Image (cartoon, rainbow, N blue to C red; front, side, top):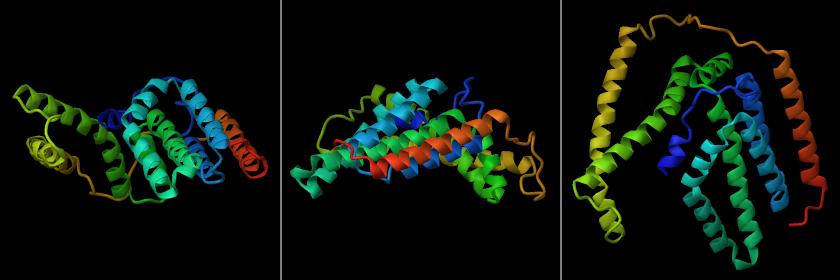
Length: 248
């Protein structure tokens, strides 16, 4: 779980995907997310997953995606088992399809978060007409999720060094043992929120609604070519998903 949260942390990189305009990457993520719902054929969903993985390889973030995948395995197993439970053992392929759909959906948006700075995402949302207060809350959430996971791991390691055994006991005992972890984490985050509020106030946040920005995003030639490629690939995959008789 903590590995999955740390996987959302943006690390500066230099790849063709990193250099794309954030709006192009948003179109890509939304297009592949929409393609997930065209067909429940496993072969089609596996093809979408392979295409996403190729993009992650080009972006040089495949290792961080694998970290997220390892952290989200419990959710994938839960989705598979719940669908198997309610659909019946005869619908194993259908349960696998729903699991693959979630995996493709997660992978498509992983590319966006792993290759785009929170500042760029904030600027895109502002350009779309979303109030800056909401975009700031969104980008701060993205930025502090990995920080929260690191601090949680530090608290867990500290409590284990003091003799706290999280792996022993029944389900309710394990929940009770997490109280010495959650309380310090909540207190620490409340203190952080006060520090953040004071820092924003000292910098005059909200003083004027006419904000200026360090740079303006501009669509370049490579962005146009990438956008045309995404649209073409989406149309082709949508056609294949509807018209082709996939084997399974």
